Image (tube, rainbow, N blue to C red):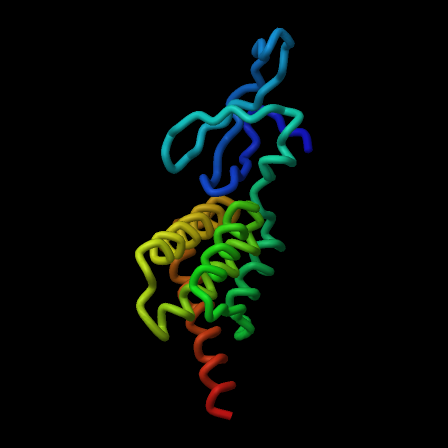
Length: 171
């Protein structure tokens, strides 16, 4: 995927960034091109080889249609759960690394549901917070809405999911 200066992109596990320049650098005796992107949340610079954007999962920010699909997925009462803490943590870590926002939303939803049942471990709590941050920041950037409005929308969707799950258990 090709990007240009000014494009807003998502760098997996770091969030939304803006491509500030395409730079050429000498690497091992050969010249290579890199995207220099500023991560908005931390104001840090990340350099990604132009030829490795797919490998690191760099992608454009969601479209409005994709936002609707993500919020709909959060509302859905179908949640993947694992009894085994280690397996659950490993699966969720892998989902977070992909940078796929739908996978990040799945992690947020499953850990939110689990948190309703029992307290999360420190590492899962951090993962829940990270998933929430990544989702809120991208949806906010993609929709042009304030993060508080996005948090309210996400909380409402997760509340709907929890209610749907409770009604399934009761029936």
